[in-house]
Length: 86
Figure 1 (spheres, rainbow, N blue to C red):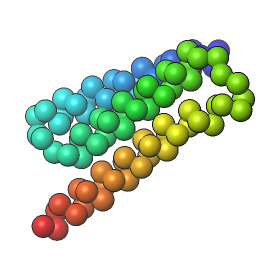
Figure 2 (tube, rainbow, N blue to C red; figure 1 turned 90 degrees about the vertical axis):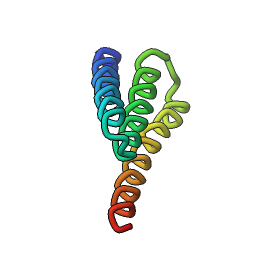
Figure 3 (spheres, rainbow, N blue to C red; figure 1 turned 90 degrees about the horizontal axis):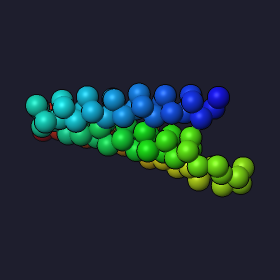
């Protein structure tokens, strides 16, 4: 059951990745590029969690992908606000 839910969330993240890539191609706004990369990393990390049988002691390393995702989103907001002021 957990693998099914993780697979569905991974698919949803991949769809969000595709939408943000499309918006980035149309506008060339770096905010969309950062979001696309963040959702791509999230899709990969959740797909790996769903497909690999991992031990409990190695599972926290897979959450580094989520940390990277949130850091990329924060950087996107900072970059967007900094570029507006210039």
